[in-house]
Image (cartoon, rainbow, N blue to C red):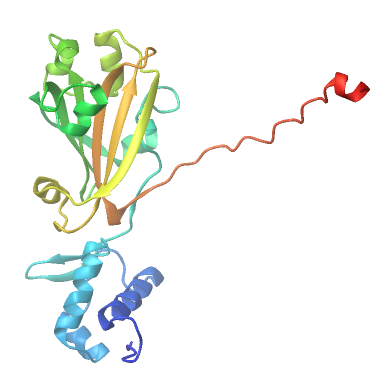
Length: 263
């Protein structure tokens, strides 16, 4: 392994490219410890500070993780979310079995809070309007992969099971449909990238400068009135979103106007 001092690319980025390639080839497996920073500095013939910059970059990208007092390790493969929020509805208005097997959702809090701007805008109310929020995290075997929240109007949810700190054993929207007597008819998903809040970074166990993907999901009834506004935040470098959909065939050519044909 070596770098090209005359290349336009910075040395730490050249090293990062080589480390990515070796990890992709399988030279280092998920969970495997990399050589120490002094050892890699000697390998590449660069200063230790250059290798540290490389490690910092690959940590932000989610490829490496540093364990204090232990070393630097390959973090593992990206978590592929093969759906946006539509996955919560499933093929038959329920959870997909494979999602339930791979991800565990834990309810972390239920209460009334001031709605943040994006939630208030979705409901068409003033910023800071008090709303009911149900907060959760989603975990895999080795990490927390999602921080989420579902918001409801207080006037809708008061006196219902949505106020209780309990899981329902079925998708939240099914519980909401029953207790609110309103059917989820359509929804919009808006995804953006941003820096995490301090709390999000701590829960997701990422650096504060690691970007996150943020989803705003607004579910409507048949009258286009919002029932629920849900938020989900994922560590960006470790998450890919994949949508599979059918592409319609070409429309048949319309028959020529008989009147024009006879003219």
